[in-house]
Amino acid sequence: MHIEFTQADDSHVDSLVELVNSAYRGESSKVGWTTEADILGGQRTDAEGIQELINKEDSVILIAEDDDNGDLLGCVHLEKQNAKCYLGMLTVDPSLQNKGIGKMLLTESEALAQFWDCTSIFMTVISARSELIAWYEKHGFRKTGEKKPFPYGDERFGLPKVEGLEFIVLEKKV
Image (cartoon, rainbow, N blue to C red; front, side, top):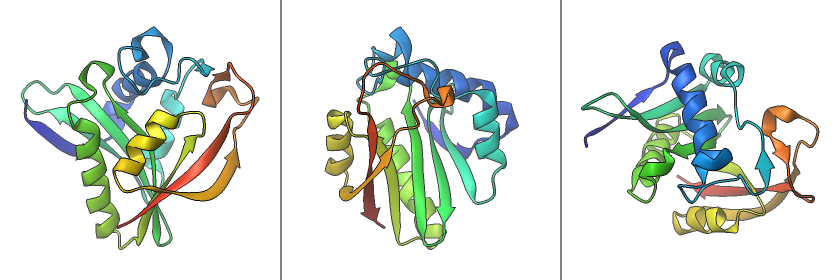
């Protein structure tokens, strides 16, 4: 498999929605280790949300495609916010997790952040996702101590199955 990294455009919207929702929610997500299915139901994203990220200024969805057959393997959303780069929606096809694709997407993300002259990359992760937080820490991210509330009542972010969800902020210098 040869992986090509490119910027998503309008033609990728439907496949991105399918990929992201399959990796985070529902039974299909349980094939991989990054599932949120036990804490959140519903959708992770929709076509409108993906389109908004593609069209937003200083925002890119970077995609990893199999250069041989065009299959979408993973993606990550990056957004320049002053001197920092926000990283979100890092996704790898659940059947392809633990093959280094997520790490490659992180490396590409860091290169883009440097190109944008950002000093660091930051993200929010649901605090209950300790295994995922540990993975990011293994790749150089550190907890900042900052927390943000989970948007209870906004179904665009999913249907909580547990109480007390919140986001923690992780950051890495680039």
